[in-house]
Length: 277
Image (cartoon, rainbow, N blue to C red; front, side, top):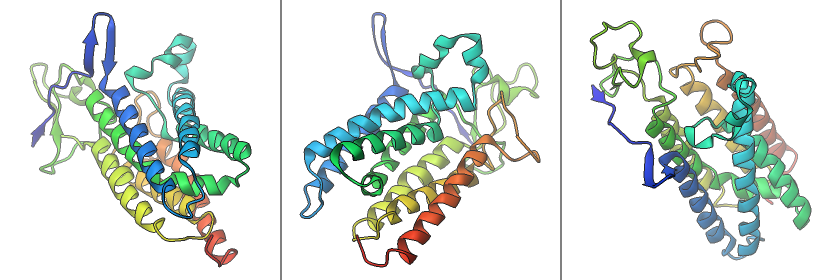
């Protein structure tokens, strides 16, 4: 079994100024999305310019931060807002919802599309392959923060956690126990599936002309499926628990519409729009 490394969540500290790894992971994800977008815009007949990529990434950064934090607090931590409304702004402590961030990005893309006279799914199909690297680094940030652990496991890749830092995982252990039983590193599973695998599939799929909505639909379908599956081994948020049947989580409830809508978009793309866009 592996042991969780002692990782300081603060990457840089200069006096009262502290830069957290979690925030740096988001910056890296945004930078990669911008670089990939610029590269794609430079290709002939892309229909995009570097300045358009600059604008849409800026819009989406605002959407991710505002939507992700607001979504998390509404879906998972509404009691924290009631206890102290300023908790809404403590982003550096973790607590970002992908589904909330997705809503924020959809709003941002809609505003960008209207400003530049584009159709919504023209923007969505261009942006979808740029998202997974950010998801990858965001999940690495979750790992550094020591959050989103999974159920116990006997698999050799399970990770044991220090009891003084993770009392939830050691609740039924002897008082002198130093390490928890091994648990699934579900945040790393998500990094692999939602980040690496999703990126490779979408980048390859979108490298050829596809019907409008097809790339967006594939993104929604695959992300929803990956998230739904990983939730089976991931512990639910302590403040919510399981929503039904001792296995249904909020993440699964929020992912199911993505799966259905993604499948619908793919169907519309290929059965109603046979010519490549």
